[in-house]
Length: 352
Ligand code: SAH
Image 1 (cartoon, protein in one colour):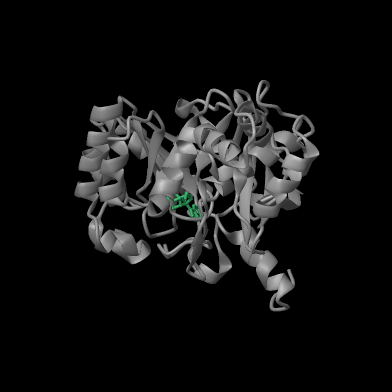
Image 2 (cartoon, helix red, strand yellow):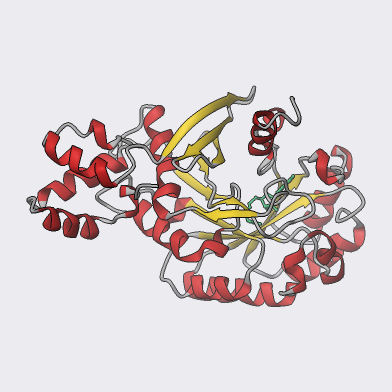
């Protein structure tokens, strides 16, 4: 596998140009072109000889859109292929305030949450920062966006993978996507979602970043959380809440809890009461979403009426909370579902 040019920051590109014996302004040209989603072979303002030299060492197109699936609600789902043949997926959701892209940070995942399709086959590998960035560059470009006039305005690290299990590349990604010479998406428009890796949450708080932190809570009781999230055997809800408080202390950013409603598992009065006890006085918001049932996982979504009842219990208890619509539910919206389907189809197992 060749190297990935999008992994390099502007100063690193300057070093490369220096090694190549090129003028340093070439680095800026290449950097801008990368952020605009151009392939190396398309950078027309650098000499052909330089393009050819780069192509000997670097991938022309590290992330390619293999397939786009359109939902009735305007959501788009992408299957991307990587240069080593791996497949990842992403989502684009359109809102009044802008367009949010959901990116993957790993191929597969090793967290193995009981409801999630991403971890069904474990972790294959981490994505490099350039591979995470390229998902955005390519979608932004495909929709007519540039670095000056972005189509993708918001980013959520909520695709396949556990972002904090790929810590260094993810932090590098956040710094680079926010680069003023490039696509420059504001850190405040970026949300990182974690299943609750406490040491990395604490480390992230000290990075001096301004990204929004989301935690997939899904159950306020350790004993039952452990049944759906193996990571809960390592870190308790109390430790997670302390890490969130520290994140707020350091960044001033209110934190978010993701809570996927699973029938009979986490939608009970007792769960609502515990959430109220833990969260009502904290600077946080709860995003409720009905489970996107993954057939292989055997869990069911809470019925609509019960979801509204749960929402109302939390509201009455003073928790800031919303029940979110399931964007793209008709097109396999849940993490990892599309990739699994694609892989199955192409290995001749299931033909959905
Ligand atoms: N590993 C990170 C990033 C995944 S983000 C994390 O755990 O936060 C994706 C969000 O969708 C997480 O809150 C995850 O728990 C949730 N999720 C995964 N599969 C789901 C499903 N089938 N239905 C509803 N939510 C799901």
